[in-house]
Length: 308
Image 1 (cartoon, rainbow, N blue to C red):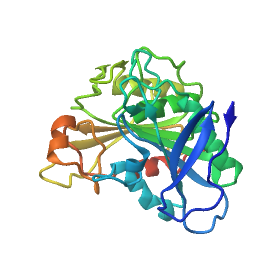
Image 2 (image 1 turned 90 degrees about the vertical axis):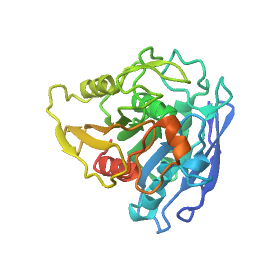
Image 3 (image 1 turned 30 degrees about the vertical axis):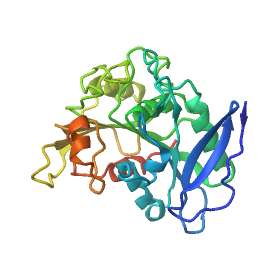
Image 4 (image 1 turned 30 degrees about the horizontal axis):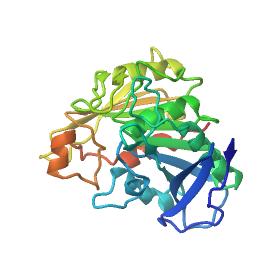
């Protein structure tokens, strides 16, 4: 069913944007890979990155006029000895790139088997000894965040931890729900104009979602953490002209399973970042961008202790 033809046999230099292709059920899928420059001392952690609706793997990997804040993961390829792979979504019913996430009431999503795509990429890297099967992680934004939550339910094997930004679980879901504990990090803005923080209809793309509290509760149940009191903290506020504030609630111990909810009070549909800031026109569409932390750094701190 899956013919592996991924062109990743030779090590790549850090930050090389080496493209790979793989055949999944007769469909050619593509990705971009960055591996550490140092000689491998054994299998490494692997992070899959999923762009949002309209996005591209190239933008996630730092290309374009204004690179995605997810491109801050490139700073961790060498420093944390981690493999980073940006997956490329296909076009859906609206002619825009995206992912076949769990929202059964969203006709605009592609119909491709994106779970099989992620599984095949991970298997290829594990089979050639590059990636550690116990340390596979996924992070996605918006539609990519919805798909990240699907992968947390259906990847084989399941990832050790995932991070979903500006996304939550579907109300009318084509997925059966979590099958086993997975550590989940949620990063969401209370003033998101597209994916409502409290739940409801996703603007422009469609499909109803549970909201952040509902999504948190799904994973607290899956991870055996119902009734666990969270450890809470407020992140230092760095910029006077930033109208947002950050509250973090962590359920469970660092070694996992663990659920962490990062609430951007006043934040919009945009990745928090120290390095990569969107312009005023874009912010008028998606809302305020927090600049108190780097999403990739916070996600790596959450991922690093987790093992499958």
